[in-house]
Image (cartoon, rainbow, N blue to C red; front, side, top):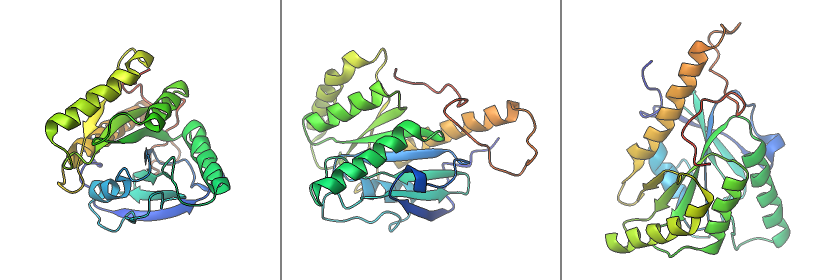
Length: 234
């Protein structure tokens, strides 16, 4: 079956959800992005979708406070999750949004993969390390994406990546896949889209093997229970 993911023809805003219960139905596969505040998530999402205004870029860290969901090519969803550790806003709001993200990551049955964003210009940050450990402990499928690679010399970027992977290596039989990107230099877009394309191809292959649906024109439904066994780090 030809790819429907790499070449993005449409990106439509679906909703901003304050919690899991407010998210759309689980009929489409979802791919979520999350990272520490000021990691460059919104810029990367805009690069990823090829639309400059898809996700709002703000100079204020932690601007994203809701679960923002976009439907791509009418076949899958891109999910912009609030950054963890954001500094602005009341502590009670921070706790509430963190709880919403936790519920989404652990309970959303059609969540296929999380792109965990790490600032490549920094030595390992404890909140990033802790978050990766939480993902692993809760069996959330994820890959690591080191952002802002244009801001530092290549040797420094590689040193920071090596230091981070050394910190987390003991938790995995096989390290999660690692990618690098720069929204400014427009580097890494096709590689990240390729990850989604691979997952969508596997989902479509599984749907083709499944018994015929009474609604043949309905997009293939995916759940964590019967999701294809993609390469996982745990």
